[in-house]
Image 1 (tube, rainbow, N blue to C red):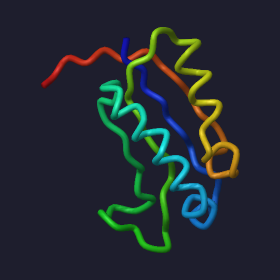
Image 2: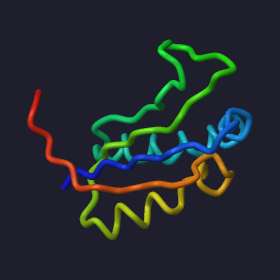
Image 3: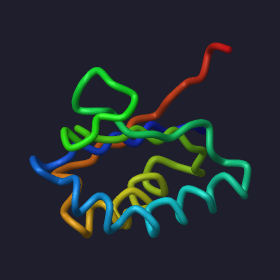
Length: 99
């Protein structure tokens, strides 16, 4: 089943985000390589493709896991959480309808 993982950033997390980004992306790439990634990306803190120093307010990952517990376990090991980028994460079952 698909699960939406929503990470909400701490204030002023841009530098921590930059530092932890390679490890974060490596985990996402593994999901992609396994064919389990639907989409992933950050929420710019302002209405711009590249928010510059404004940074990001969080991230969305939609990926396939065997269970909610597996998705929550995966999310709890995210390098962004360990680095203090995310102040919280939530995981919700997701049902893809379109396209």
